[in-house]
Length: 175
Image (cartoon, rainbow, N blue to C red; front, side, top):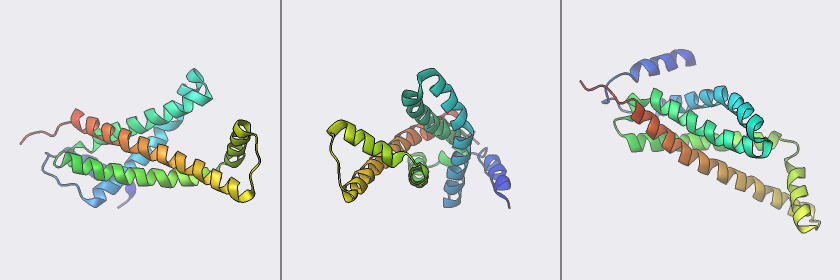
C-alpha cells in the first residue's frame, strides 16, 4: 500500500462515527499528512506575509499561521479518529508533531550558512567583545537551543489548539 493509498483509506475511515480508536499508525499518518499540508501552504503564506509585512516580521507571523492552519486542517481531516478520546489523541499527535518539528529545525539550522555569522554579529554589536572559539560554539548552541525551544513551544500550543478546533468543526455523525 502506498502512502497515497493510506491517506485515501484514512480519509475514508475518518467519515466513520466516533467509535474508532486512534492507533499509533493513525498518529504517524496524521503527522505525515501535517508535514505535507505544511509544505503546501508554507511557501504561499510566506510570500504573502513577507510581501505585506517585510522579512523581519512577515516570516515569523507566516510560520505561526502555517503551524495553526496545518493543525486546523489536519484536525478537520482526522476528526473521526480524534473524537473518541480527543484530548489524549490530540496530545499524542501534537507531541509527535513537535518531535518532527525539532528534527526539521535541526536540519534547517545545520544547512543555513549565515546562522553562525548572524549570532556573532549580533553579539559583537551588543557587547563589542570578542570570544574564544569555544565560547562562540557555546553561544551559537545557546542560540540554537533557544530557537528550538521557541519553535517547539509554538508547535505544541498552536498544534493543540488547531487540532482541537479542527476536530470540533467536523463532529462525527451519530448512529
